[in-house]
Length: 129
Image (tube, rainbow, N blue to C red; front, side):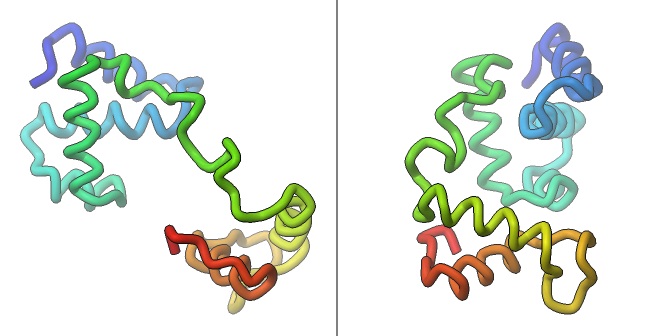
């Protein structure tokens, strides 16, 4: 699937800690595809769905390694948030100052717990929950 040059470049990007973590993960996925792991196995290793691996492979096949780079329009920071700027600031403070149920402050929050907090605190249910 990957040319020898692209394989080496994917390995370089994966090992380079200055490369964005999401891009590194996509490179890691392609490396594993090249090593003959199944999409299901790669998904289990990287904690993503196998259809995500398929999408990344398609991006590579149509755009090369450039297709794995982060696009500035990806993510929820481009007018896609259902929270206002004030609510986002309040959420940030809540996450810093409080603990996820069953844990201690500073131990971190799971995505599922953050979504539940947003639903409870701001009465917002995302279509992605």
